[in-house]
Structure formats: structure tokens, C-alpha cells
Length: 432
Ligand code: GLU
Ligand code: MG
Image 1 (cartoon, rainbow, N blue to C red):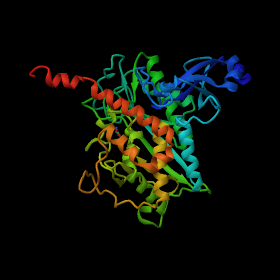
Image 2 (cartoon, rainbow, N blue to C red; image 1 turned 135 degrees about the vertical axis):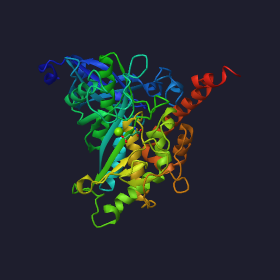
Image 3 (spheres, protein in one colour; image 1 turned 180 degrees about the horizontal axis):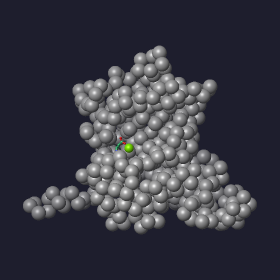
Image 4 (cartoon, rainbow, N blue to C red; image 1 turned 45 degrees about the horizontal axis):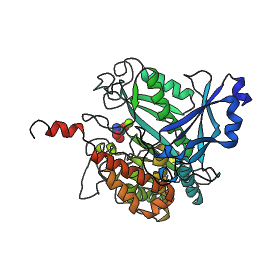
């Protein structure tokens, strides 16, 4: 506390992820921090069951229990000064039940459990997150007509220098960003984050999304990590680069003498990711809109397959070996909660290794052959059914999380099915 005050910080913004990965939080005056550290910050537990438009929906343990409390405890090891708000620092918080016990819905806790599970096998997961997003005007239209600025840097695709500002500020926030460019679609950007242990990587990805949204707002714009915001463009991915290290810190995927230069552990990790992809999709592709990103010829996946340096596959093994031997899981979209998406990847990998699941031969060339590989779930409802059906996978994420997630998301599907969309109006209103 003295340390914060001595560098001119008088407010600590404490944020934590809800089920969707939205940053919820509170500004705490530094003089009130000792109290917050002792008792936590009380929030209604139904924050976890609140939609992006502010409706609280019935999920067990929320509305039905009379909207009880949970407490958020600041994690002071994560304090960073906010470059655009002088005097304000922000940190992450961990959720606990009022009796001090672990809150099973806390996405950070769920991911921590998965890292511990891999720890039982003597393994540490190293994750490099890649996130794409669109920059929009406040009315939701694209900022600049930058079709064709595919993988460019500079003012053509980014007329007022959003990306440079975002790159520098997210660097100053200690988020481990490394480089940035205009992505494939018009007004779409990507900033890469370096790799680190899974929880730290998810913390950085979560904060990165919050920071980018805030930075866009400062300029009167909106950044969206929605999976596929426009009919005429591809979507935004959350690619997860994953390697595993053993007790000696060496990469356990690197197998110079083995097929494809990959160890048996790497093969089993691939096997697990393919076998549990339908269930993992529920967490890595968690919205109705997510399934509109999938498809052949999209750079997003469609089939449950893997390939060597092959971007048409769901799982790409980049060409590096040695310490850089890794898997690039291309399944997730940018709307995924980084904690739950990463936890889903780790759960599938854990099961693949534990159950010694052998993958089929890799995809050769650019290909979408449905006689060879199964199609991913093509709707949120189908992915939720796969999550519910995959007991081993669900057990790793925890009963409480899976129960809440299914209840929340099934309510989302029902609400969508009842809503009249602009597509229906365009299709039917004139002639019918
Ligand atoms: N935007 C693509 C996706 O939705 C990925 C493009 C790329 O390969 O970076 O996954
Ligand atoms: Mg990209």
C-alpha cells in the first residue's frame, strides 16, 4: 500500500473474469485496500450469470438462492500501473465463497486446477496466446475501409495509428506483447503475446482484451473480439500455442529421432485434442456467433484434424522443433474466455496423454475431406451437448463450472431461438 502511494497511485482497480471472460471490477481507494485484502470485495454471485446486455438469468446458486454474495480478493502480485489513467493501477482478483472456500465458477481457479492436474504428470504447460479483433466506429461500422490491407503495418490500414498506441500501452502494462499487424480482414488487427506458464498467459490474454477495449474507447471507438462480426469477412481467432515442459524444464514434444520430430507425448496430446474437440469447442467457441466463423476456406477450422505447418487444419504443428516444438490449436475464437479456453485445451491434452490416444495421420496439403475427418459441432447447442456428454473432460473442469456454464449457455441458445433476427426480416418480410 505504501509502495503504491509512494509512486502516486491512489486508486487500485481490481478486476476479475466472469464466465464469459468479461472483466468485472471495482475501483478501490488505496486507503481502503487493507479492508479489501482482509474481507474481499463483495459482489453478487450472479455477476457470473449476467448477460452482456445486463440480464440476470437463472443459473443454480444465483437467482434461486436469492442472489448471494461472493468475495473478490485482490492478487497484489499482479499490480500494474494503467498508462492512460494517471494515479490508477489495476490488478486481478480471485473469487471465493463467503465462507472462504474456493468458488468453483471462478475461471482462474478452474485453470489453476488444470495446471495442477498436468503437474501430477510432471508437466508444465507453456502457452502463447494469439488474439485478433476488429476496430469499429461507435455505431458498429468498420473503422476505415481497409479491405486488402492483409498483413500490413502502417497508416494505410490504420489511418490514425491505433495499433502503435495499443502495442506500446499493452507493452507498458507488462502484458508480454511482442508484435502487431493489420490482420486479413478489413479493420481487423492482431497483436501477439509471448509464451509463459498457462495461468500467467491466460491472465495476460484476459487483461489484453480488457485493455484493447479500453484503449479503443479512449479514442471514441469500439474494439470487438466477437467471433465473426460481419457476413462478408472472416472471423477473429484465439489461437493457443502450447508446449509442455518436464521436470528438467525441457520441451517434451521435441523428438528429433521420432516421426515428424515429435515425441509420443506430443502425439498423445494431439490425439487428446482431436478426441475431445467437440466438448472443448463449447468453451473455445462459446457463443451462437462462434459457429459462423467455422468453415472450409476460412483460415478458421471446420474439420477435426491436424497437420504439419498446415493452416487449413484445426491443429497446426508449426515447423520449429527443439525448445520451440509446439502445437497451435486454431480452434478457439477471440470471444472465448481465455481462462476457460486454455483450461479446455489443457483438459484435452491431459486426457490424450493419460489415455495414450493416438491421432490419425496428419492432413496432407490444403484439404477439407469429410470422408477422412469429422466436422466440428456447427452450433453452440451441439457443442454444449458434446460438453455434457464428455464426462471425463467435464470432470477436469469441475462439476460446478460445467453445470453453470451449461445452464447459462442453454439459456443463451433459447433466447436466440426466440429472437427475430434482421436476416429473417430481409428474407421474408417483402414477399411473404
Ligand atoms: N482469422 C483467422 C481465424 O479466425 C485466423 C487467421 C490467421 O491464420 O492468423 O482463426
Ligand atoms: Mg492471425
